[in-house]
Length: 240
Ligand SMILES: NC(=O)c1ccc[n+]([C@@H]2O[C@H](COP(=O)([O-])OP(=O)(O)OC[C@H]3O[C@@H](n4cnc5c(N)ncnc54)[C@H](OP(=O)(O)O)[C@@H]3O)[C@@H](O)[C@H]2O)c1
Image (cartoon, rainbow, N blue to C red):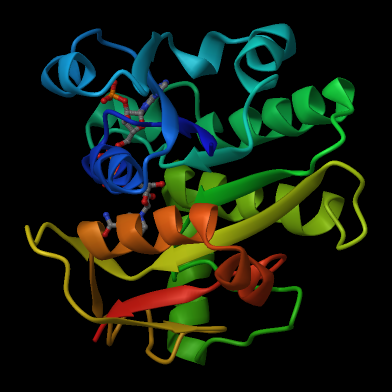
């Protein structure tokens, strides 16, 4: 049975990830700050439980407790789109969380590698390939680095995985999923996945519905062939 810890489970994408994982019969620990987000579903599905807590305050030991039985971690964390969420603390919510998750997994020294799936953005280039966005995008992104803390957080969180977890790492494998502009379509639709963006993320952005992102991330968690195709990469996903 697949055991998945979902961070940011209460978010717009996180909730869809939980729904997709339920359809794959996974055992799910959904981390939420406010209890009851999944009240209807937890009464229906014994395999789903809420873990109540604010991950920004968790210690490495707190993460160890949640990760001991976990095969896959999916992070859908993101800053709330309010002044406090964008400019207040914790400015490195995602980066610090990923950092602690890595330290916790390393310290557990489990025999099976833990898979880590990070939700990120097409605005973040994969500097490991290297990937060179158009000049117009690079200029705007440089400005965003000084003005928009969540963008820097997304870049640094992806860097923590790319720089620290090499293909031969003993305990961790990762995929960083990069959607374009997120939309809230109810129905799953066709989508395409690429190694690098095929559009300018600022001046010619495409769309990616959250349900499609959720489907792709849940499929990565459950489908070994798909995981082998994308592990250690930063796939970009657009609606088809
Ligand atoms: N908007 C776009 O077009 C776009 C495009 C590409 C990528 N992205 C990225 O996609 C990710 C997810 O997007 P989304 O729209 O699904 O996010 P969302 O609905 O805003 O969900 C964010 C999640 O993070 C949690 N969270 C926020 N601040 C927290 C804190 N201080 N401590 C602990 N948990 C916290 C939220 O918990 P609560 O429910 O308790 O607040 C929620 O579960 C983000 O990283 C975003 O940058 C966005």
